Image 1 (tube, rainbow over the protein chains, first blue to last red):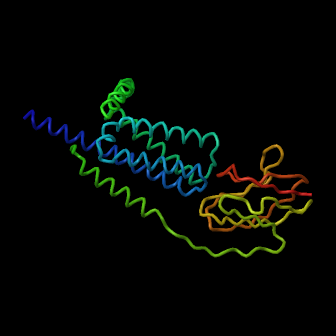
Image 2: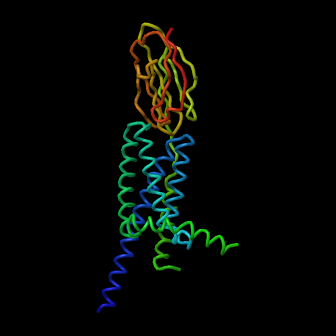
Image 3: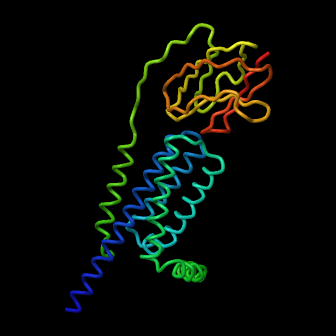
Length: 143
Length: 125
């Protein structure tokens, strides 16, 4: 009985993780595509960064899986910086408003994912504190 | 491999397919240029020509040709930075014809709201 309940919880958690990750990745790709259509180097670099982060969110390789929490944080920082840049300097027109709506929903997905999958800001803060030592250990191991 | 990795592979494949589907071509027919119009084009996010002249003390016709697929508009900014005229933002390849009201003599900055780094000047003698 308890095994069934545990398995059910694990399955629900996996489903939740997939929905949050897939949603965030698709929204990230949507805003990447919109930025890629705007021309000029700045928008193109923005689109490339979004695409790299979207792929990093889902790519099934060990290093990315280990640091998925950091990728989510980086993406959250990047999308907030992009929204901030638009508020300060961006043009106000239909495509821009649509893109900002996508980015706001993306922020929502990332915040929920950080709370549900990474243990919230406290969990991320603890991992960030441990990160330098972890990286030193990895470098020593590789050396 | 961790549980759920198969699904992640599927998801990655779907993302790549979505990206590939996003590339598309477009074709458009050009609006004719009205006679006597001031013509400004945008090619690769550059106003061409970079310096144009408009008649003084009278309105004029502006033919704005967005030759890029990216969205652009054209505005004439006065010395105070405020727009004396502002066109709509639209994606190319497309053209628009505007009737611009008479502008005071002076030099105006050509401006695109989407790409503020684009530059040019309009002189009204």
